[in-house]
Structures are given as structure tokens and as C-alpha cells.
Image 1 (tube, rainbow, N blue to C red):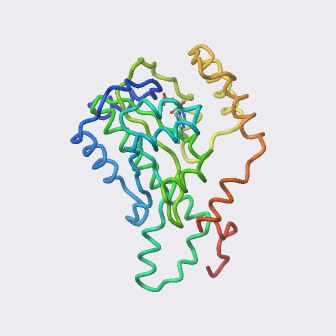
Image 2: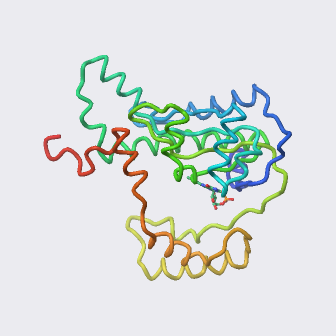
Length: 252
Ligand SMILES: Cc1cc2nc3c(=O)[nH]c(=O)nc-3n(C[C@H](O)[C@H](O)[C@H](O)COP(=O)(O)O)c2cc1C
């Protein structure tokens, strides 16, 4: 239809990169420019991007992320940090109380702003012929990253982004049937969803992605049945980002 839509519709994640490939500075800058031009809540730009350029630090991150070895072979590895620290500085400059920062809305705001900037980066990188892989797995080591990157209060590491030259081609992964994710005027019935999920499960079994060990529905059933660790809620509280999980009440 047009080159932008073509790029978007050809998206796929790559997990094997050419370790010798280097991303030239003008390409790095172009992708950063695209990321930074993303829309954001109140123009708050509630994220920071930390490029991991120190090989020792990169190796340290790879060591604690055995499920994501591509972190070690991509040309550029960027960590996206949800960031209300600059908002705290604004508050400080005006002697504000900053009380509302610890509510769930803040976490949503940071996650949305960071995701929009990151996806802009993905689209820009792919348009330049690079391959990408998000690494949400880094949330397993969010406390460690917070320490290693010297993240201040009111920040939280959300996900990483690998950018590089692919070493192995990947196939376009099918998506859920459109009716399961796009509706008109009201949410779809469960009967429609259940049929779509069964259909999609079979589609993915036929697709046969080696890294997927479980049928689609079982994967999510198991994921959401698991015990949830306390590390990240504790970190969110310690970082001042979830000090008021119930909100501030009617007058807050
Ligand atoms: C927030 C987020 C976190 C992700 N984390 C990982 C990850 O830790 N490791 C990985 O290999 N892929 C990760 N992915 C990639 C997804 O697995 C991938 O986008 C999905 O399976 C769809 O495949 P496709 O991008 O090839 O179409 C992540 C994607 C997103 C959006």
C-alpha cells in the first residue's frame, strides 16, 4: 500500500544477530530521533533510553538473562526506563508535593509513553533494514538493573530492545483472527473469542515455532496461574512509583 505500512506488516522479531555488525552513528541517531518524536502523555516523555555501550555491562546483563542470548549479539542494546524522575525535578522546581506519583496511573503513564517511543524505534530501525527484538524478560532482573544503571527514584526498567543485522531469517508470525481483537461499539462475546482462540491455537501449531513449547491457550493459562514474585512490586514501591496502589481517594 505504501512503504510505511509495508514495513509494519512485515514486522517479525529476530533473535539471532550478526555479532560483527555495527550500526553507524547516523542510523543510531535516526532511530533515536524517531523514538523521541513519539507522542506522550501531557508531552511528559515519561521514559529514558539507556544505550548499553559498555561491553562489560552488556556481558553482565547477558549473564543474568540466559533466556535472551541475543542481548549479547545485537549491534545496539537499549534499555527503556519508565521515568517520572524528570517530572519530580519539575515538581521540585515549583515546591510541589508530588503526592500523586505513586498511584497506578503513574505506572500506566510510564509504560505507555515508553512503549510508544520504543515502537517508533522499532519501525525506524526496520525501515533501515535492521532487525529488532524486545526483551521484556529484563523485568526479572529489574532490581539488579536499577542498581547497575544507577536509576534514581521514580524510574523503573521496563524492557530492552535489541537492534542489529539478522543472522537467521524469520517468518511472519500469524496474528489472532481480526474479530478477536477488533470490535465495533461493544466488546465481543466470549463465544466468538473462544472460537477465535481455538482457531489461532491451531494456526500457531501449524506455524510450528520451535521456541513455543505449549499450545497458545495453555501457555497463558500456565502463565497467569503461576505464583507472582514480590520483587517488582517491592521495587516499584521502593522507587516511589507504587506507594499509593489504591490511588489517592476522591479528593486526591
Ligand atoms: C514488551 C515485549 C516484551 C518482549 N520480550 C521478549 C523477550 O524477553 N524475549 C524474546 O525473545 N521476545 C520478546 N518479545 C517478542 C515477542 O515474543 C514477539 O513480538 C511475539 O512473539 C510476536 O512475534 P513477532 O514479533 O515475530 O511477530 C517481546 C515483545 C514485547 C512487545
